[in-house]
Image 1 (cartoon, rainbow, N blue to C red):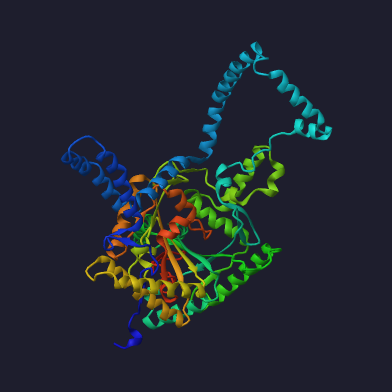
Image 2: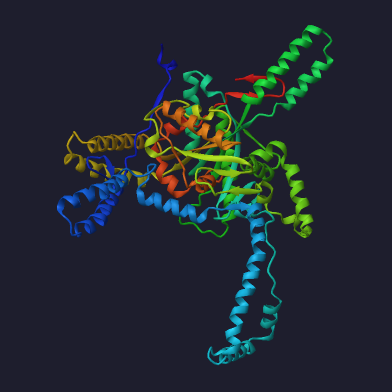
Length: 587
């Protein structure tokens, strides 16, 4: 077989910058320090007890030793202190955002008002009986003098001031970090500018090795001039086969031959049986974030962002066309952006109601609430926000009556050697499995400087380490990884951080748990580790939105350093099954 027909493999080296380890590389530095602190905290009081030494040792073995081992191992890949912070932050922030929260608040108001009146009555009695003791007269006289010194206009304004009505009818719309959608751009509340493109995928796995190689190198040319931060999102939903069924039924009604009618009826039953379980449609998106130039004036940042994102979109369209992909050009870019958010947030509702129908319902709610004057300024998040988001569970999030759970591939969970299209396994996992790939390009000059420093540090460490320790293998791998990156950067490749977040959805909790277990088995079969986002489901939910905003802690835990070739081998994402209006087929 010629080399042109051999499929290429790509190396994903371990991170060359990692925190230190103790005990021959067995435990992380933070875990070891926490274990030592717990040993001292428990051991010092035990040694101060007035008992024999044997009794002290037994008490230490029953108390301090298990705590130290627990701290060394950690919980779900996190150190004990970091997991405790995550858990207590979850307890503080767990809530239901949306209509249920507002109804609960309305139910609690009468009781709170009664309690407030009771407290006010209790406070008034001592003030009336002993005004001189509490110095009420002098305090009121001072307030009156200060009030009289204010201008009359300010006193009138304070008296006439009324509470403003809420900006959102749905509290979830105010929670979503989107300010507005204009000029085909999403304006976030943290003052960022986002552009979303929908890409028609190609059957990458069915291409020959030479064609795959040409596609990858064409995509490399695009990434060299692409924005610094990008997000590749795959949205999986159950396919709508009703149009195809209507076509089959119309043809069946016109058929006169009895044998053909029997065949068509069998075909109709087959489509219903398979389509109800296995018909899946996937949508592929590329999300850009505008990155302003360093040391530039920000007088017209909004105009620069719109122009830069528009240019990046046209550039992506031209380069992706060379790869065989096609970028869908919507008639209304604002409506397209809102529709993408609507399909991501309202999975159940978007299957039954289109965005125009949803918009009519929102307008009717505004009119019924007496806010007809605000119809021209309804926020875009009102149209795409679900009725409620339940954050009260630490293992999943309930959004629009659909249960969401999130899996994160940690830094050491990636496979070291991968083939072209290596993420197709996750893309084609089935219904309810979405994937987000975050790609962040790092400044080459800064990475080269860090690379040289870390290589010198690791080489000095390995001289003092025995080759029988686990730490020796980790240091040796870090040194090899550093030289690998040094060679790649010398060949004009770029340095990226790659993050992988997987969203698992289901209609019931049991089905969600089953899909999570099956997804873990699938990734484990491919030598990939995965961890759940327990008690960080809210952060994972916000990270999975098409806003190129991976939460900082999740980013630090899951980032894996790669060169230009490795992410290119992953991003040409294939489509395996589809439903069309003329035929039901597997591609």
